Image (tube, rainbow, N blue to C red; front, side):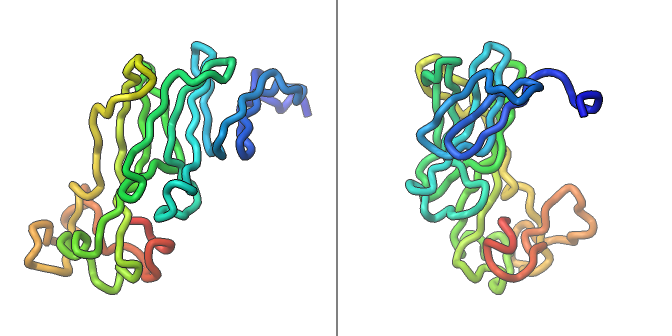
Amino acid sequence: DDAKMQGGFTLFSVSKETYLIDTDGRCVHQWRSSRSVFCAYLLPNGNLLRDGNENLEAPCFQAGGAAGIVEEVSWENELVWSYAATPYTKFLTHHDLEPLPNGNVLLLCWERKTKDEALAAGRRPDLIPDGEVWNNLVIELRPDQQGGAELLWQWSVWDHLVQDFDPKQANFGSVAMHPELVDINFCPPGGKFACRN
């Protein structure tokens, strides 16, 4: 029904292809990546900002939404800049990214924490059946005009934890009295596939 359709173009990705289509479903432009693309944004300058799956390089993060690479490519699909949170054994970008008006980019990034790190943060041992926990980071990148990007800052869930399990830890406290913090033990049993943090 044309009356219910929003005007303009639609951008979407399928596997390694990103398509820009018009309201009649005609392909106006397409970009091909060497990796599967989960999300992509058409920038005001006509370039494409996209993520890319690095599961072959990052086998420890085999999960839906796992990315690994963010890159900007031109209309002609030429690389402008790229960034990977490495090493892949410790970090992996995931699910989405957000281009900012100033040209910077926000990313979500998993950070692997060991069982010892999780226990030191007050995690209940029964909630670490995989021997690790995945922390979440929000990072801001600024393209460096040399083909890469610089990490400007990061926000870590790990810096905002509370727990009422282990009184020996510095983040011990009343979970109910700290709605501004994240309870490290608020998750169902079942390991990292039941709960990511």
